[in-house]
Length: 85
Image 1 (tube, rainbow, N blue to C red):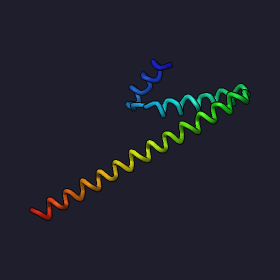
Image 2 (image 1 turned 135 degrees about the horizontal axis):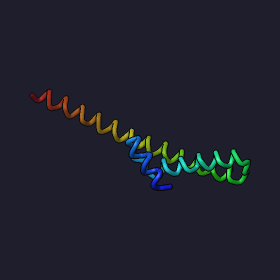
Image 3 (image 1 turned 60 degrees about the vertical axis):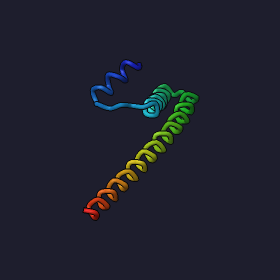
Image 4 (image 1 turned 90 degrees about the vertical axis):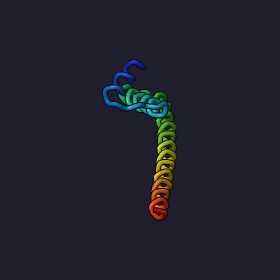
């Protein structure tokens, strides 16, 4: 399974972290449970998917916030340098 994920990530040129891998496994679990009508597996997969979805969302939000703050600082530093010159 891990080898398959590595091959897919190399072809798509992405670097999945544990959050995306967990989310993918949760969604696959929900799909298998739905296909075979397994109620308890569906509940487990749904809970797993929700947890990892929240984790991906919070990670993306914090990375975006840090990126924007760094860009704003970088832009303000350039303006200060231009004002001095």
